Amino acid sequence: MDERKSVKFKKDEFAIKEYVKQILGKGKISKIRIEYTPVGEKVIVSSNKPGLIIGKRGEKIEELTNLLKNNFKLENPRIEIEEITKPEFDAQTVADEIALGLEKLGPLKFKVIAYKNLQRIMNAGALGAEIVLGGKLPSSRAKTWRFSQGYLKKIGDSAKVVDRAKAVAQTRPGTVGVKVSILSPDAVLKDKLVLNKDTIERLKMNSTEVENMKIEKKKSRRKKE
Image (tube, rainbow, N blue to C red; front, side, top):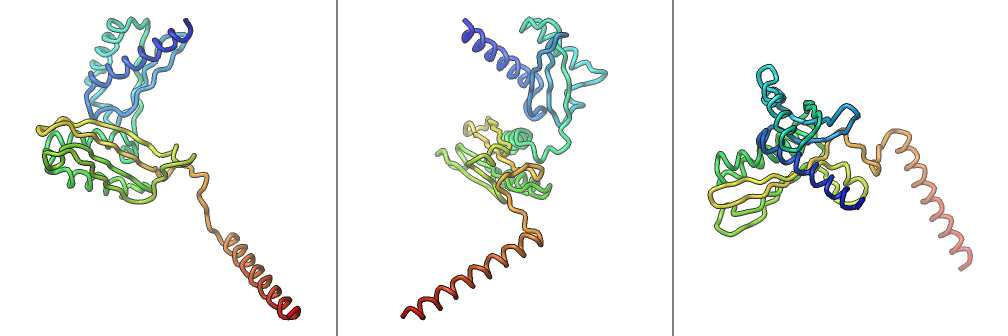
C-alpha cells in the first residue's frame, strides 16, 4: 500500500505540474516545485516573465488557484512566483524560446535560431552550451543537428551541475525535439584546477626534481658500466 500511495502521490504531483504548464503556456515558466506545509500546498513557479503570469492585480494567480482547488482537490494551494534573473543560464527557458522560434519562423530557419541562442548564452558568460535539434530539418527525413560551444561536462559528478532541459516544437513538416544543456559560470566544478603563482612554482620545483633524478640515474648507470 505504501508503494502504491507513493506512486499515486508522484503521479498526482506530475499531473499538477503539467496542468500548470499547460494553463500558463510555453515559454513563460521554467520549473515548478510543490512544497507541502501545515497551512497548505505551496506551488512555486520559476519564470523570467513574472508579469505575464501574475496578470493585472493578480487575476491570473487567483484563477489558477481556483482551478487547482477544483480539479485536483487541493485544500489551500498558494502560488508563488520565483523570478529568474539570468534566463540565459536557464536551460528550460532557452529550450522553450527555441521551440517557439521554430513554430513562428518555420524549420528552415533552425540554424539561425540555434546559433543566435547559442551566442546569446555564451555572451552572457556561460562556460559551455549545447543545443540539439531532432526532426525533419530541413529535408523530409528526420535528422539530428548539434550546435555547441565552450566546455561541457557529460559524465562524472561534474555533469550533475549542467542544467538540461527539453522542449517540443510543432511545425508544419512535423514535430521537432529540442534539447539544451548549459554550464553556468556559477557552477561548482570539483575537478576544476586553478593555476595561481604558488601552484606554478610547485610544478616547476617538481619538474626540476624529476630532471635531477633522471640525471643522477644516468650518472649511476655510467659508473656501473
